[in-house]
Length: 612
Image (cartoon, rainbow, N blue to C red):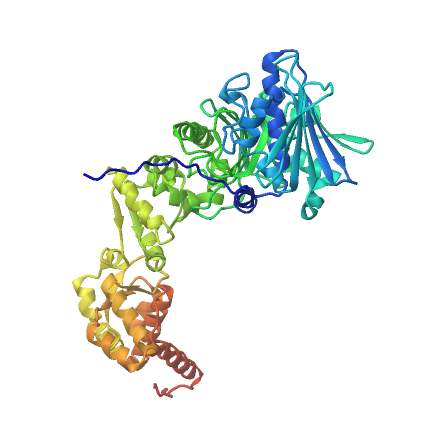
């Protein structure tokens, strides 16, 4: 039996410089993120101190020193003991001050013990001076940390008030971030609505970062306004803060995630599957203006500004942790949007139609993936019918079934003739529409959905009487002879509209044969032989309208050669009206026919044209 050798336990070693490089190049998206991290720590420290003294009044000061290229952050929060310095400033990955400081986990913004590492991105040394407010005998301490992983702590022989100051001296490449204007802009960007007074001091000048007017003018503060004034307030905030106009504003509330704010409906159509990015504040500290997963995936037509208190952000601050709480929050926020749309449909259908005009493509794509969303939006989808543009709901009000074409060309080929027969057809040839019609039939089986082709409409046209058929048999023979070699059968029918002389009707197999015929004209001999061997020629049909005055005159005309030439021209015209591809022979037919007719019209009495 083999004996195991004694094992030794080892600890992972962390290359701090490499970790800092990782943060700067892959985790933090803005070089001024150190301002956010230090404001966040200061805000947490003051939140903790309010638990010790209810009458406490917190404040944050940022001092800019141009000569030294330095910035010092000063707060009068709870401060740090020596033990806390070892735990929070030296142990990478320690989960912040929660659980040790006074209060509960949800009281604080900070969630990572790596906040100070952001400072090493812009500075070679961090000097932190702090005195804890937890004990009247607590000494003032100075902690100095360096990016090589070393630090020291010294007890200061001086009286300092409770709180913390952090001083950074910029690296040469980061000095541009340490000017008064840059520091003020970053502090206002990240902490402009924090509840603590924040000032930036440069030489003898001080500026307020978050004046009272600014901290009380955000969407989550709109509840104090009269209901009639809230919409105007929200729309003006969106226009001013995002420098764009929006279609509408939707209040958002989620108790689970502690979310309160507004969703703005975009006046542009985003690409399908593009991720909406939202401006999210965490306990009034800006988390990011590009958070991606706050709302359900289908809510890509809105952009949000919200404050939240219960969700846990990722380290990169551009998303939240995918957990049960986030899922529940997304459902609650999604319900806000759904309720808005349902209410809009009842209260202002015209406004809903405008919204659909902006976003119908992306909404249709989503409806194919989400049955509930489909049921909500399907009645409002814009559609094209042979009676004009409408919505599916309006179409169903006048029809007990859905008739549609699977292609745009098929719709064009039958639209006019279907309208003449009183048949209401939807053009489902646009992106997503055919799949949506199919899905409608699956979700609402009491409403039949049928895809029709031009040949289906052609079979419903009125036949001539036997006597009429016999009387005009000569014309039909001439017409069929004129179309020999074009895989098309000529027929005489009666249909509306009366000003339409002909209707070319083709089924799916005939369309494939036609496409293959046209395609062989543009390939080499090898491929032409292969295509010809597999090609099966299917006949189409052309209907001459006996109710059309031109056709009736053509039937009675004594000149057989002229009749055949006009039949050929009407054949090509019917193809063009149906948007069918023309072969080179058909193009020549049109060119030669028009030339011949022009020649015939210019001839004198008794002259005969020479048809090619």
